[in-house]
Image 1 (spheres, rainbow, N blue to C red):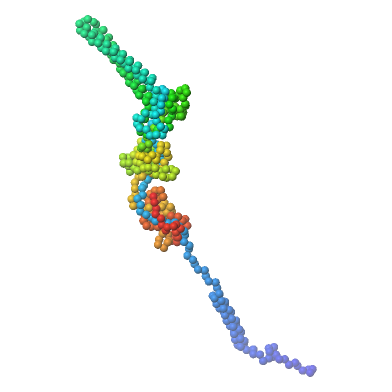
Image 2 (image 1 turned 90 degrees about the vertical axis):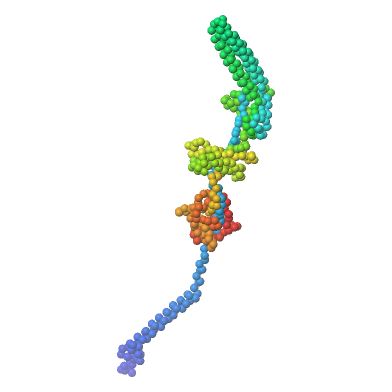
Length: 433
């Protein structure tokens, strides 16, 4: 076997014998492989897309916004009184401090504390004995001087007759005439003394100057009262009920009692000068009375109605206000002197005015507006004009009509187009002034 060449299965080029080495065939084969790979990739992508479409989660449904809970009211047509509110105080229409006008022992107090008294009713009695004696002395002096005057006049007539006969001098006649004039003056003095004694005697009986209600007595019977204001306790007598109150100033007498006239009653209050000009115009210079209502400060209960007809004659420069006084009949005695009150002074009445609660009025950059509810339970912000506010009621000039439903509570989270639901028992409420 030596010397023999090995037989190769490869050709001269080293390729496998019998293998097709045609380039065209090789290119077709490679193209077919790439095409298969691309088709396989596209098939995988298609399968993935189908699987994503089939098995993807369902999109969440968009829910409408929840309804906002609010409270509603219905705009109504009302007669709304236009009034001014103020703080006032009730006082007696007439208040009289009954004083002793003469000095002496107080014999009796003839009234019941807290009772009604009439004008001319006897309230107290001061011992009149010294004043009766003084009157008697004055009357005696008057009669004496009247007799002297009569005698002087007779003498004057006699002297004049003698003068016609030249029996006496002119000097004697003139002297007698002067004596008559002097006696006439003395008689006038005596007549004045009698009148003064009568006055003092009358002042011993103390009477009520007005109809009214008596207060607490300020001095008891048995005390010595004085026209100068001092009160002294007589021996074996009790002290006055209120000695400090019984002693008045030195310019007045001892206080016996205070009488307050409570039918009618007066209520005083002040208003700013800006409101005063409106009052002046609406009342025709206070010749036309204006209705005035008094309310309790504690409960707001009406205590009576009166008429304003009195205004002070000046504006207080320190406060810029004017003091007013209203007259109340007070037949039911609901008003009491010294009581503090809430006052409502009615200027005029707005008839058939569109009214809504003040809580329905909102303030925005463009002014006042209200949320109005439509038939679909959605709200819209509607501009309004507020002409007057009275208590809990706002009078609307434009923007809202009677029958419109407005939001009174819950506006803070509303916006135009918001859906609402009612939380009150009724879908709408009537507004009251």
